[in-house]
Image (cartoon, rainbow, N blue to C red):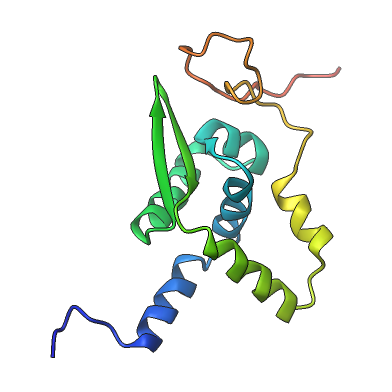
Length: 136
C-alpha cells in the first residue's frame, strides 16, 4: 500500500484542520467574491499583515488558494471554488443565515489604499492600509 495515499477520513480531517481558524474562513469568503491582496485583507479583517500571511500560507499549502503577481502586488484567489459551497453547507447545518455569510464577503467601509480600492493611485506603490486618524 502506498503510504502517500491517505484514508478518506484523514483527508477530510486535514481539510477541516486547514480551515480550523475563523480568520481563514473569513479569507475564503472574501476571496471567493473577488481576488484580494494582503493589504486589502488586512484592512477588511483588522488583522496584522504577518498573521494574514500565515493564514494565506496555510490555505495555499492546502491547495485552497492560488496567487497572481501584478508588479509589487500579489493577489490571492480561491483555487477550489467548491470550497465555498462546502462552507455554505456547513453554515446551513449550523442554521447560519445567508445574509450573515454575505456580510463576511461584502464589507464596504474599509480604510484600504490597494489598487482594487483606489485605482486612481499609482499601482506601483506598495499598498498599506491608512493608519487610523486621531479625532481629538
